[in-house]
Length: 221
Image (tube, rainbow, N blue to C red; front, side, top):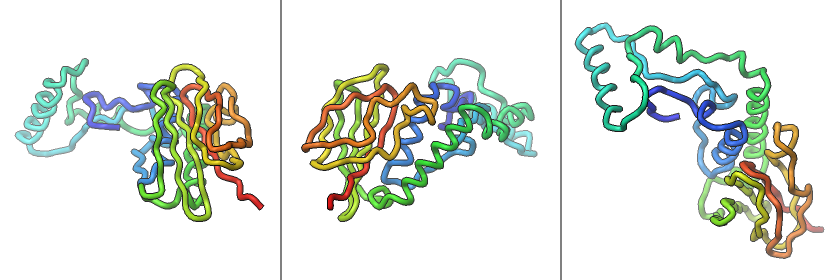
């Protein structure tokens, strides 16, 4: 979400795979995630700027200000009237979506990501000091490693439009896949990654497009 002229949401601007990828990028980051109401299930109703002022001069000033603000950005379409009841009505959430199709799956994914963030120590530490980020620009892949003294995870984000083979700098050891948005349960087209990865400091893998996978190091006996 942002201060957009028409209040259009991410769910109406990108596909379902991108919505899942965005969810993973936000929740798996070392920050406190801020989810705009309805974002967790892919709400499609716009959130347009609306007001209920009683002062006619203030109403007109706000209306004119919104028009002038977005005129400079050359947005297409007419800026909704903030004082029009219809602007408010269009922005109301449809909570019924939470239990339907991809909306339900997206909500379950958010729940799964939040649970991983709570239970995996490496994700619970909100610090850049125990984090490594490596971009694989040619493959449009982002590799993120986070750790504590007793726990370590690696997240792989694929932003490309096609599957790619990429070499990941995963530290030596065995890694258990905790999440993969390409899997059928998340309405993906099928994972290309194994459940267990054995890495000798670097490993070659095939990653599906517009997906995120999270691996956790398996403690050695």
